[in-house]
Amino acid sequence: MSVELQVALDIGSARHRVAIGTSERSEPLEEFDLQHTPADLAQFFERIRRHQQAHSAQVCVAMEGFGGYARPLDTQVLAQGWRLYAINNLKFARFKEIFPAPAKTDAIDARRMLQLMQMRAQLPMAQAVLQEVAPVDGVHRQLKALTRRRKQLVSERMSISQRMQAELHGVAPGLLDITGQADNLWFLGFLTCREDLRKLKTVRRSTLLRLRGVGVSYAAKIALWQKSATFADSAAWVGPMIQADARRMLELREAIAQLEQKIEQLLLHSSLAKRLLSMPGFGPTCASELAAEIGNIERFKAEASFAVYLGVAPLDHSSGKRIGAKLPRQVHGE
Image (cartoon, helix red, strand yellow):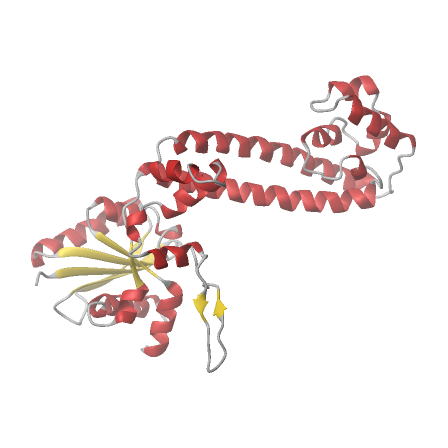
């Protein structure tokens, strides 16, 4: 049996704790703190290579907090050809409850991770905590970054829209009734066509027709509102906030459109996304997000684990005569 050099990292925002050991001994070979700087990261890899040569060992690295603050360390580890394991935080917490430590520190956690790696061949629970990370190509890494950013911007747009709708009801009764939804391109253009929200009451029909998306029909609805338009006294200070939100929503619409254009271009280079698009009900947005989160389908050992990852496989939650199920507590585990 070949020797395995085992490296455990407790990931932090600016500093990581490292414990290095082998499959042949219970005590760590080396423990140290690693600053998230280019110099320290380079030294980290050099130290591992020295141990690797000294023990003629294959390298396995385990990280708590894979992704997030672990970037770009995680991709650099895979680039070395080393095996990388992500530690499932929920299952790791359960492991620490069963095998308690005298205290909770980063150094102790790193040692516990090392212990997990040494026990994974004999202890099924240790295998469940350690999830091997399969290499993901550049296309799917880009898709993941772009689709996650798109979701964040869409969420921000929805939040602003809800806030703006509530404020419009209080400041300018009846104005929102023209369209019924604040997140509307022509309506946002109308809200921002004057510096003062109260001056929307006097915008001429010829000006309205020059606004993008405002045709004869909407111009007539706006003119009808203008005849009886009233503003609360709070419009003097709330109005500028509403208009600032409207401008931000216009920016978000443009940013989202640009991301979607890049995503659709990347889809052409993803065989997984193409396969999803061939299925009824899948469009570019859904296919790109799913392909990005999967990354490499080979990292799933069975259909069941894939279903749990997607959150579509309820888990057994029965007790006694009661038969029930529950949704997984953690999906998209990165």
